[in-house]
Length: 118
Image (cartoon, rainbow, N blue to C red; front, side, top):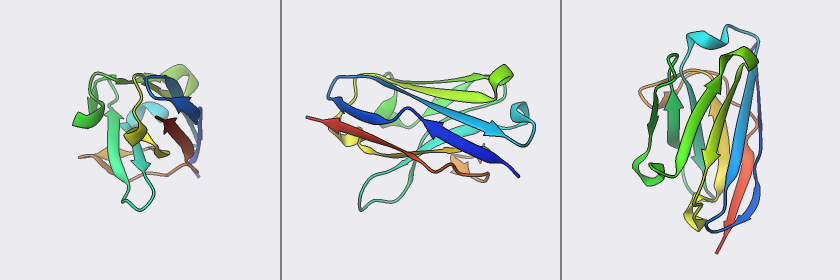
């Protein structure tokens, strides 16, 4: 059984930074592309970023240049560095363990709340 644990959310002012982490256990970590999604109140969950096995990453246009996705295969952990945060980034952020075509097919974590105040 795959377990996913996200951490690193919090309250930050606009322009600030946060780093989210996602630790996965229970299966070979390096075989899959990992991803981050977010869900704002009243909205559907949306794709934010993905990182493939080689470390190449893709992003939704609204976060390009501000967010950086990285992975540490030795620690079975991925990270999302979020800079220049905006109020519209406020959401619950979820990690997924198997992302293909910007869709999450793997296990979901419990989510971590990110709140950006103006």
